[in-house]
Amino acid sequence: MFCTMQRYFSKEPPKKEDKKEPPPPKPKMKRFKIYRFNPEGNQNVKKHYMQEYTVNLNECGPMVLDALEKIKSEHDCTLTFRRSCREGICGSCGMNINGVNSLACITKIKTKGKTKIYPLPHMYVIKDLVVDFTRFLDQHRRIRPYLIKNEDKFDEGQEYFLQSIKDREKLDGHIECILCACCSTSCPEYWWHGHSNPPKDFLGPAALLNAYRYIIDSRDSGTASRLDQLRNYYSVYRCHQINNCTNCCPKKLKPGKAIAHLRLFLAGLKKKPKPEMGGTIKSDPEKGVRGNDCTTKKSKC
Amino acid sequence: MALLFRLAGRQILRSQNDGLYKFVRPVTLQPSQYVEPAKEGHDERNMKLGRPQSPHLTIYKPQLTSMLSISHRTTGIILAGYAMMFGAAAVGLECPLEYYIEQLQCAEVGPACLFGMKFTLAFPLTYHFWNGIRHLLWDSGRFLSIKEVYLTGWSMLAVAIASAIVLSSC
Image 1 (cartoon, each protein chain N blue to C red):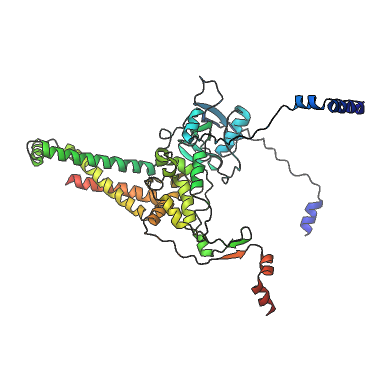
Image 2 (image 1 turned 30 degrees about the horizontal axis):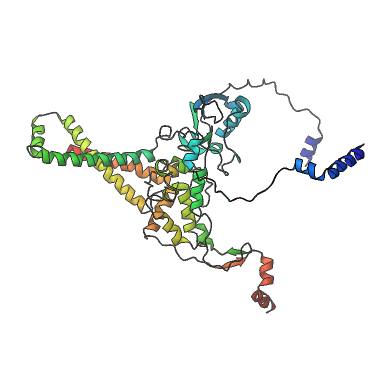
């Protein structure tokens, strides 16, 4: 106690260290080669090309997205890319970095060599690194990414579906998908068959992972119709287990495994187990107590 | 002043009730049949806008996953080619195949060359066989995490090469 008091009241200035300031670190120059395409350019110049930028890594954050931001703010404000959360949860900044699809915000800059950045492969480029997601999102819409219930008596917005903890745990590793399209656009089969006529096209790993997620959900009762929808030459069976999807998924999910299990479902080798819990519960506990006669009776007893 | 103008304006509008209103509001609304907008495919729309397709096969990094898959297909094609080649040879050639094999043995081309020829015949078979088993395991829904994919991939390659060497050295 006394010691701390003494330290507190003593007015000795801290000892000055006669050390020179360390010399400023050598600039670490890093070259980025980035795919460029300007839709508003002159018709003759309306072509894609690769542009090179040099960034000092000492003045830049560790991730590829930081470098892109720096290039955009300091070198070339016309560089266009999607970004939002900068922490790998929104799925906006999916792009092809050094030949592998990943999210720019969670991919570290390699200090050696040149980093090449392309938009997601085999997609229509709107501008620079921004690609057209219309078809990808339409495929996701087509697998009906919502719970389908057979029973009509359900008070929408007022009730919750019941699900046991064990059944809920089965969904882990499937619900984390952020639809960044890294997996689908890394898949050669999706490149070749992803754009055939809409009801009969290869849906791609992302949509199939989500389809599987709703098929194994214990609260969903549209399993049969969902499987029937996939029962054609293209939707699932164009997958040849290349596993590029699992290899590049920024959320470490396994779309390849989901597709393999979907096939087991389609072949009838795997059946959906009976849900451990069913029915609904009032979403508002207060209302549930007031509206339900049983509970009031019980409380009286 | 403002009041004066306002009064004057109101006066003008009132006095020329028919004329001025007609002049400033010449729009007449008429009901018409709803025309559905022309349906345009995703590809057509993007091509019309002159959007390029982003590069794919040429820029994607060759990884073990994709390389083993493409070589599985290649070895399959090679095996089919061998089957057709030997089938056609058996039909078309004058002497049976055993005769030519004996000729080859008598020619004394050297053990290394013989080994090489045997290996080119054996490797596609062993590779396609062992990778086929790997695919069968995948179809049962197992070994599909990326760690297992790489582990089974490398071990399959080792086994395929080893068995091809064994086949071609005996």
